[in-house]
Amino acid sequence: MSKLIVTAGPYKFDAKFELEAAPKTCAAFKKQMPFISKIVHVRWSGEGVWMPLGDLDFGVGYENNTAYPAPGHIILYPGGVSETEILLAYGGVQFASKAGVLSGNHFITLTSGLENLYTLGRKTLYEGAQDIRFDLVD
Image (cartoon, rainbow, N blue to C red; front, side, top):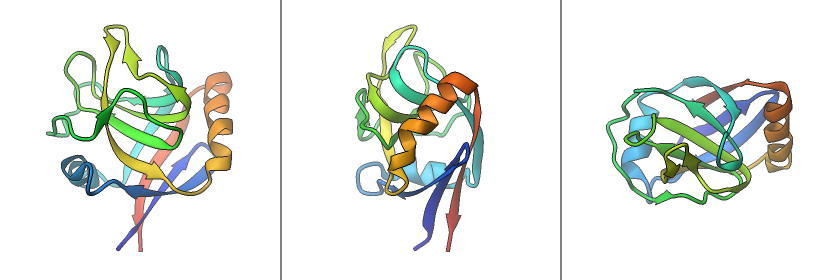
């Protein structure tokens, strides 16, 4: 089994796929790896950072979806009312867009480095976009 590493800004986090709860989303995301993007601070959702992905289609619908991810949870909004996006909660979040409350598929959970999560969120808020990368390593 490969290990999932998320590098965001200057921080590294171990993570796990939520394979039982969101198998289709996990499989679709794995096909895109390594996944490299930028995170920016959320506009309407609270304490979170997000990756706006435009019309990128992962080919999945809803599974294990929530509007209230916990800190360290990563959710994928597959598109529809708003653009496709991935959100990482670092504090209290009600996932939303200018169209209102949304829900996304909780498919990754950070498992280590959580002591840096709030700092990452505030760094993104005050300093701007940060690099993010998802890797599978042996």
